[in-house]
Image: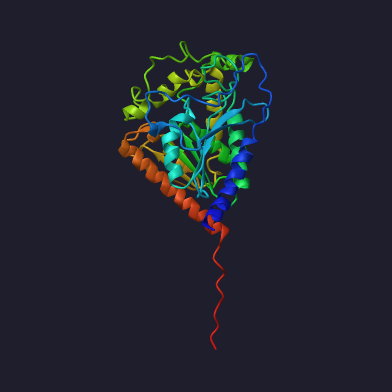
Length: 359
């Protein structure tokens, strides 16, 4: 009897993953310089099992309209999931560096999805050099997130959907929520919400005349000897700080270098739109970042946002030293449990009290 019940619990998730696998709309990515998506990866020999893909991990592709298809990965639990968690990776970051976190979230009872943006990681390219971070707009990324969250909500309505945006993924996540993404909660993990400086006049002109795929600076390609995240001061953990570089050395298709002019302009446009829509954003939100970061101003302007500061954290708290990472995980799990309870309360409201009458 217990075995039968277990299979019944797994049935909705199997249908959900099968449904997600059908969202591969191989729409025209036209153009001679386009690059196909990369839906697999080799494990770097330097990494231990703790950084390998979780058990049952599966890759898929999602495409919306004419945009390049985007790579995502998913792994579930052995029982009915408590929450569907969708992670949006940071700038130039691949899904592989999230394997450790995904495994932990699976162990906590959640199904976890990780999606990369168009033109980055293993997703298809808009064109240009394969290792150039290029996108003419963030609208395609936002549309893909909305499609995936809607699929999750419709495929498993009893399970809350939590959206996590890391770094620049925080900006995409925020814009997706502002445009109606079906989520029960939004987590901004050390979000990158504003570009550093504006484009020069000639750079804006080049982007407008269709030359946005030009690199923003010289030597924008991927370099084997480039400093890793630890050397750049983005994390205080040497091993985790080298994860991205290790995966890219072992998998040339995942290599990313500098950004294009068009991408820079798209970043500025999305940032301005996000700022304009803060007051009208209604999803419950959590900011996980070091004190004094740019996310605090955004969080304070949101109707339902609280900040959980991470003393000593840097730009990549999910890859930081154990003490910081433990605080990051604790804040995340507390928020997820809170949203699970709220979701349950909405589904099963308490019965209306019947007034008593004395004789």
